[in-house]
Length: 304
Image 1 (tube, helix red, strand yellow):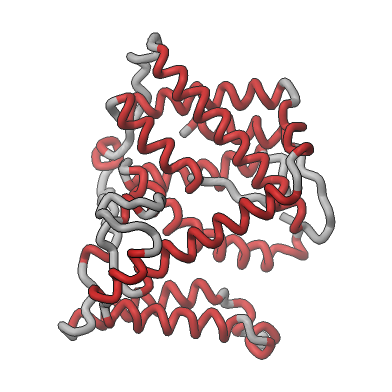
Image 2: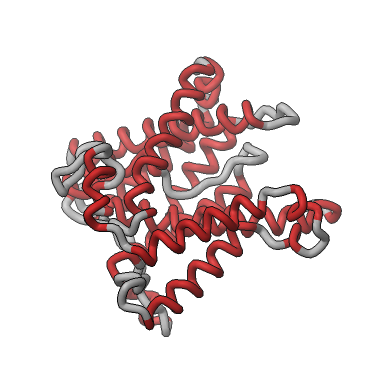
């Protein structure tokens, strides 16, 4: 962190944290794994992977694109602990790929693929978040898939949600959008005081305050199903109870290694695509070290 950029780096870090935290929790919820694991993945990705990363601007953490694979893998392996063992070996494979200079594969991926991937992710995120905007959270575990477990799909859900509108959630959403729009205006960015307060931070603060204030109004109260309940860590014993460790008991089975290979290949390709996308957006046209990034991602998966 350069001294002259310290304030900007801190502001950027706060914004990334506010975006990453709900994403980590959401992906953990969608994968059907302990919510605390989402936080741990975010910490490992944000600190350890960043230290060894070969990219200047990429952000690491749980990947939404792997949700379906994680759900399927946990189901096939029978437990979350066994899945963690597969992730460890997938991380080893990623380190080997980095050592073999396999990161160069990213140089042969057409721009159309990268832009299509970014557009696809953006459209999916928008469509999937609209029901939550109206306060409809019938089936969060199926939100990463087109055909959801509640029988609806991404488009029919947009019609179905009209019957389950939560006024309090809509009010919070409208105010949050208003804050983000105002925070992007020139007068806000040029103001000496306001420019140091990230818009997303205000959104989180006002959202929490409104959620608390609505408790006294039955028509506006936010139902607990719309809130993410993290385990309370009050002691070292509580922390120990919420930590899970790899179980290598199925390491001798063929299915285990198929899952390991799938995780390693898909995670590596997603990493390379993400790096290419970030480099395309970089105004300074920096070229990330993809081999170093594979090593960093592999190390993060092993520690995770």
